[in-house]
Image 1 (tube, rainbow, N blue to C red):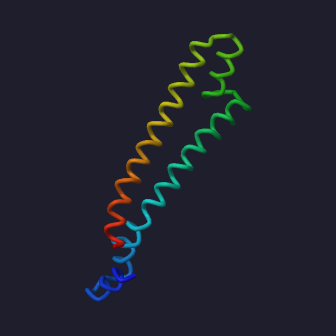
Image 2: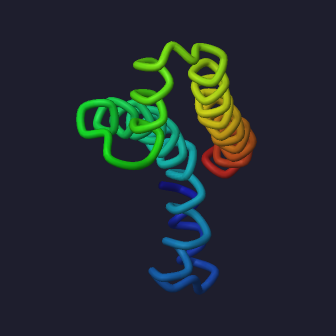
Image 3: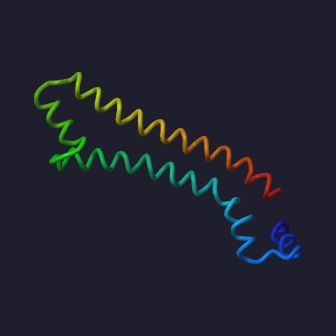
Length: 107
């Protein structure tokens, strides 16, 4: 709050306060929510495609598992989960970097 008061005393508009103080202070929580939502979205897409497998990864899982092509099944599964894991780790890294700057702004 004192940072916002200081910004207003130096002539910052509410728009400036939002984009330069509030946004950066809230960004770690926003990125945390995006990371958790992304992980749940990947799970939901895989489960949804397994239930209704016309095209996509669900169709590949169904094709490979029903024809006992376990090498292909595991390859698709590992690639998909590696991609999800890498993107989740990138978001976690960004969250950690931004939380450092947000804590410095809030202090």
